[in-house]
Image 1 (cartoon, rainbow, N blue to C red):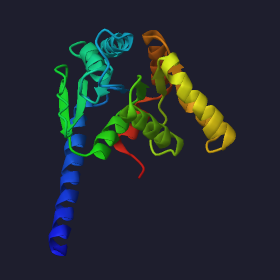
Image 2 (image 1 turned 180 degrees about the horizontal axis):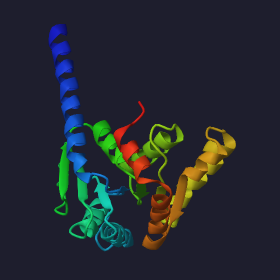
Image 3 (image 1 turned 180 degrees about the vertical axis):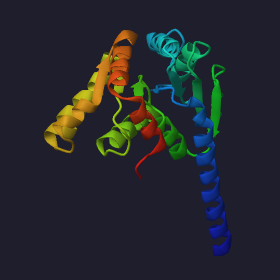
Length: 229
């Protein structure tokens, strides 16, 4: 029984390694083209202002030859891929195999399915020159705090973390300021500077393009080649 367990665990490690290699090799298609990762709820309806804003941001990014990376599913992910698709940038979907099936949306130039959340999350961060986060649920919050932790600890190069929708995010930010920072002192005042909040596609694009202008191509490529572990 113990030997069977060891064998099973060893094969799982090999599957993880294979998934990581496949992800890196597939994402090589981005080349030196900058990319923005967009997170948000899979449940957002196409009639939502957030869906429409994500689609508009995807379109503007793509027209500037900036690729878009999402989780490849419906909702905000579909909106951003849809806006990007066929407009100049590569539309990338990093789907996840779940017990309840999440069908990939049809607006993807590059589609990869992952079994392991942590490998997928590495791809989101490793290839992003900026991250835009729309309203979402537990998964979106996980992605937000993972990005903040990576930047706070210097595991990846500096990139903007942009929250879209002031009315949605204000409660979260108030809690961070009053509880994490104020009452407990669990973060530093400068950690609040890691976050920007916007309410229009134009504001989001201004944050992205400002970063692109100050971050050289060489630095972006180096960030893609190297992640500190």
